[in-house]
Image 1 (cartoon, each protein chain N blue to C red):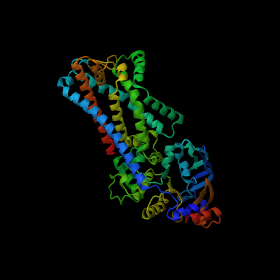
Image 2 (cartoon, each protein chain N blue to C red):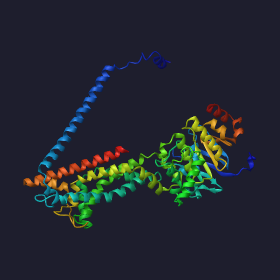
Image 3 (spheres, helix red, strand yellow):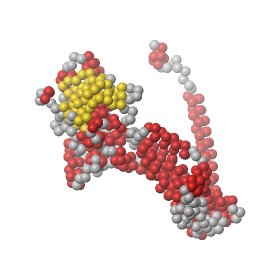
Image 4 (cartoon, one colour):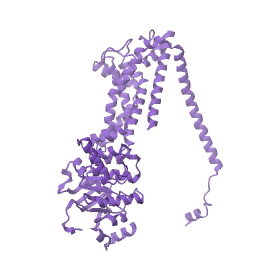
Amino acid sequence: MEEKNKVEKIIEIGSLRVETKSKVILDGVDLNIFKNNVNTIVGPSGSGKSTLLKALNRLLDLDQSMRISGDILFEKRNVRDIDPVELRRQVGLVFQKPNPFPMSVYDNVAFGLRVQGVKLKKEDMDRLVSQALGDADLFEELGGNLKQMGTSLSGGQQQRLCIARALVLGPKVLMFDEPTSALDPIAKGKIVDLIRALKQKFTVVLVTHDMGLTRKVSDYTNLIYEGKFIAKGTGAEFFESEMEEVKEFLSEAD
Amino acid sequence: MKVIDSYLDGGKEIRWKSLGSRRIKDRVAFALSYVVLGIMVIVLLSIFIYVLDSGASHIALKMLITTGNTATGGVLNAIVGTWELVGMGLLFSLPPSILGALYVVNSRSNGTVSMVARLFTDILTSVPSIVIGFFAFIVLVQRLNMGYSLVAGGLALAIMMLPYLMRIIEISFRNIPKEQIENAYALGADDIRVASRIYLPQAKVGMLSGTLLAVSIAAGETAQLLYSAGWNNGFASGFLHSGVGYLTYVVWNGINYPTTYSHYLAYVSAMILILSVTGLIAVSKYIGRRK
């Protein structure tokens, strides 16, 4: 791995605060996301991890009760100045629970392109869909049958379908919100391999409370606790940290 | 600790209710609900059988293929008029219901506006139909000078159909998993795309069965049509300034008319109404179940 201080930052978060009327969810978050690395955010349930991801692609805009302050820079541009549709194309999000749309595998993958009004020739669309499914390690498993319903696949396959659906838009950043928590160990293993492979082409942001997964894939690990960032470090540094919070979290998570 | 002790010794300290008394209560409750159900079914069936029997025993082909008033001739004008009015009502109520439901379920909508919209639709469902009819008469028929007409009648029906439709459509929208909606936004869909590719296709079964229900309710309305559609011994000659015939009018007026034939016409009209409404509800149930 190259030297850390030379790695390019693709997202810079400064003093991010998210609150509803009744509670503060994120409280002064400073965090950098490094390009072509797996950036992991760990923390207990309810610590604001998912909210952070939704702030990054402005999905929080959908919830009027959320008040957001602070800055999020994507490639040095404030996300507030980027059209949400464009932002979400470049910063993809894979949700915790696999949730394919009730349509064919093909239509699921093509969904993003279609809703963004991309006009493609049939063969170009076919190629993109197949490639995304291939990158998500699903194409061969389906034996080329892309007409079956996305909802008829197994849980692990559905999750990889959701990854393909995000990949096909050619995002620069791909965010995963606890992608393995709903999956069995074998399906989980495949996602782990996939995340490792994906960081060659994409920047990965991974939210999880699975420390095993973090150990396996993380390049940069950040601990979030009650809406604040407590500790950050590269893969090995983090696990050897002497900070009380990190030790406590690690002992409870393992 | 005392509580823990009482669990550990097999719950001896807890005074369990005897199974016998629970079983008796269970039986009584079941028996009562069967009785109530039985009464409802008997009432419904007797109306059904009475109407079908009176209608079927006096039906004549002439009644179905000719037009006329409620004393002579047939009810073809009323059959056609009923569906014209209901169709017109649907035309005026379905699009705003869908748009209204989309607005209410959208998380970025103004909360106050959504609340007011919901409040008004709730109030609207409880406004008596005769009041809607009176409103239609003063505003549509007189002020806006539509006269007794298809448009005035359709609008009067639409006022009644709108809250039902909007509520049912809203419910079918809300049955779509929230994650799917979020996911569509995350893939870069805007509000219009989310509506056209997620909400509408996935809610179409609910929307269809809701529509059929609203249609069957509207087909059985009388009061607001008396004041807005008027009546016509023949077919409506246009959308405005031309009364429309409808089946419920024949039922209402035919029974009051002192000839046997007009009574027969009323029976037959009631039968046609009940059969078509039952058919529509059956279709909507079938579609709903197939989902």
